[in-house]
Length: 367
Image (tube, rainbow, N blue to C red; front, side, top):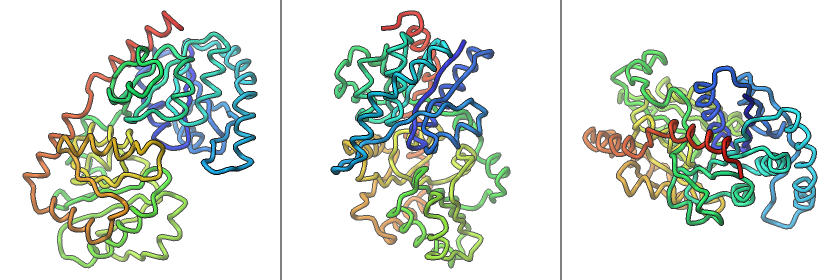
């Protein structure tokens, strides 16, 4: 069997693809996988680590302001599916799977032109533009949040399965993770990151708090992943001299670090929340106000309403507010435990079985 994966722009679109690949590989050990994405995108780097053959796609995102790029993006959206149709025809896949990002559209359109069944997965509470454009070309749209179906043109094609999460986020024991990373069992471990591309406001607040914690005698460790494009500038702007504080450009082994953490501080991207839930971690969320349809605030509200997260709006974010939120949780082990239980209760533990059933049904009964 052959499967084609697509999705890009950020790790939030790429990691679900890789998680679905793991699930399909367990069911079909001899299957072949190919990934279609932009050579300039993060997907090429992340997919290369998995040894999956990569097929470049020519695609551009639309800008919200008037720009010549929008004209080129529209032209590629029309022409690229016909080039990819030939490639998909040669591969003859059993199924094409998309997870969003503008690169998904030409691949899903090409699959439709080639008569190959396709399914989409949308992790957010509000569907992105690529999913809205592609949903009529697919057998099914798989969702993490039930409320997302109300925003689809064909809600009858939707199925709620949760979010595909890569191996390691479930079942990794906290003390084992700490031993693997060389973290003391007695240290209060704060893990923060701004997503695969980084987040300037979150970076600034976290690094200011890290400088403060670097002067304390408290047994703690604060590790922050700032995003590669910000790393060099931040090292200069916020010098850290304490072993209690560590700045990283990117956290490659996120399942291990998250398993070891006491608190996770992050944006509210859907896949990040799924990983937090899979690990059963208390979290402080700072939703990005710059994403389409304000979906990160909606994602964060879902976790806050269930008692799994504290939410700080970026417009009101300051180092002092973040420090107070962290300290409030650090000094209340009982509240941390309640939040951990609430986070674990959000996770959909039957996602793999539901996903495989939907994938196999799509292969048997394409649109």
